[in-house]
Image (tube, rainbow, N blue to C red; front, top):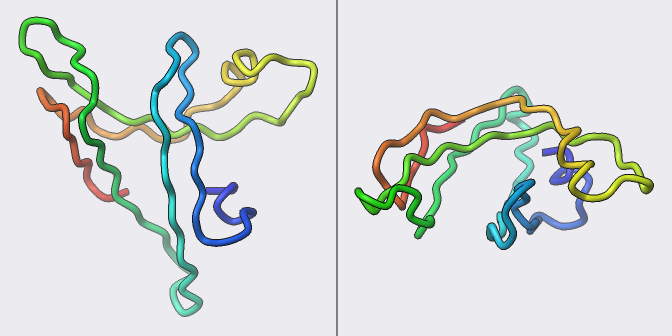
Length: 105
């Protein structure tokens, strides 16, 4: 969310990072400031065509974790910076689907 506020324009696109896997996709965020409603922010997350994680059911049990970013450190690798991030929110797990939609946050 901090990157959305600091970004020029209303759209932000970032690579989805995972400490062990490459090519996890990208996340596209779009924000609109509503000056009369500065009290609360809500959003809904969904995904499409996730990779199969269970060989037998050909499905996945996906969830999302939102992290607070670490302070950038030019001496650390991207992987080490990822390890410093602090989780601040986790969605519920949506069972047996490759196209989940989570409850609004």
